[in-house]
Amino acid sequence: MEKIDQKDQGKIVKWLDNYIEKAAVKFYPEISTYVAKLRDQNNGISPRDLAKKIVSRKSFKNGLVGSATGIPGVLALPVTIPTDLIVT
Image (cartoon, rainbow, N blue to C red):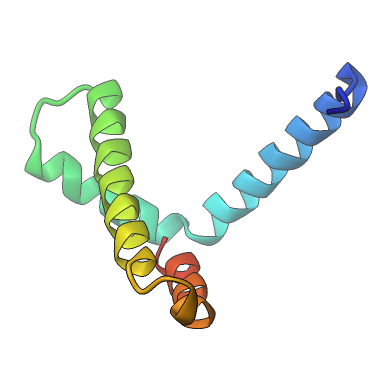
């Protein structure tokens, strides 16, 4: 396997940061609503603990979706892959 030099790593990281920033701006209203709802449900929680809670919930959901779409196997790949991508 070929190693990526440090200059290319920097470009990849910069591209990824820009991509995430654009996605966050695009979906900001939904993200803000979700975070505000969780804050209301968990009064007094620290920002770090709130972030852990969000990551935990989303990881669990993505695991369930991945499991559910993986059950039918190869025959259902044309349907399950797009469904999995849309939901996650």
